[in-house]
Length: 224
Ligand SMILES: *Cc1c(COP(=O)(O)O)cnc(C)c1O
Image (cartoon, rainbow, N blue to C red):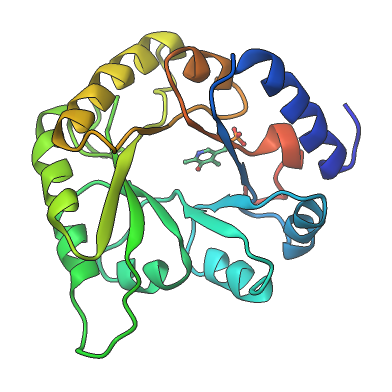
C-alpha cells in the first residue's frame, strides 16, 4: 500500500473496476477526522464524492472547499435540532431514520433557504434499537413519508453491517429491504452499503454507493 491517499484512491478504483461487473457504483470517500487538506488532495486528483459523519466538522470542510463542485454525503446520526443546519451543506442525507427528522427538515421560518436534498432511509440491521436506523418494521412508513416530503427526494436505503454478523448475510437482508423501498418508489434504487472491510460483500448484494474510509485515507487521526 502506498502512502499518498490519491494513490490509494487510484488503487481502490482499479480494484473496484474488476469487481463491479459493469454496474455503476459511486465511491464516497469518508474523510471524518482527517484534515481538509486530505479532502483537497483527493479533489485535486479528480474525486467528487465525500462523506462525513459529524456536524460541525462536516460543515467546516464543506465551507472550506466551497466552489470545487464536491458532493457531500452526511453519514452520521442526525439530531433533530441540527438536521436543518446539516441540510444546508450536505447534498445527500444517508441517515434518515425517523419521521420526526423529516418533520424537522421541513420546518423553519418562511423565506429560509431550504434546498431539496437527496435522502436515504437508514435501516437498522442489528437487534439493538440504540444503533442508528429505523427498525425494519417501520421502513415503509418512513420511506413513504420521505417520498411525500417537499424537503427531500427519496433515493434509496442505507445500512451499516452489524459487527457480530457475517456481512454477506446482513447485506442479503438489506437487499430485501431495498426491494421494499423500491415498492414505495421505483426510482429509489440506491443502496448505500459497504465500508473498507466489507465492500466486496456489499457489492455482491447490490450496493450502488460504497462508503470507503481507511482503505483510501489511511488510519484516522487520534479520536477517530
Ligand atoms: C466511518 C464510516 C465509514 C467508513 O469506514 P471505514 O471502515 O473507514 O471504511 C462508512 N460508513 C459510515 C457510516 C461511517 O461512519
